[in-house]
Length: 137
Image (cartoon, rainbow, N blue to C red; front, side, top):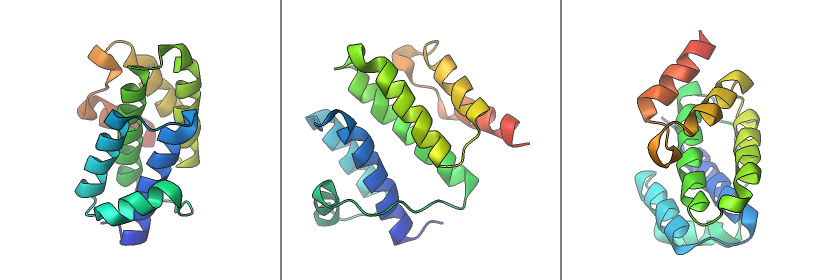
């Protein structure tokens, strides 16, 4: 189980990911707000994080890092509905976030490669977990 500091760090990281292109669209905001609710982060705290990011806290749990990577994949695909011309930058950004989280580059590369074979480029959670499990063992 992750603590409050880690939850705020996760959310702050996702906000930074969404702000990479300078703007957070309404659909991204709603997605991030949903993640905040899932993490039991109050709306006031979420709104505060939008303007005041917290420092990155590395998650100790490998499974929590995989879940966070999946959230970032979902967030990137929300962005891609509006920014197909920046797809390469989004993939690079996602790859770098995954590396920073300490995930294996082979697993990240495989997820990014397989994204195109799924509807809306959303890799199902079970497939994503299997990819990371294979690399972790």
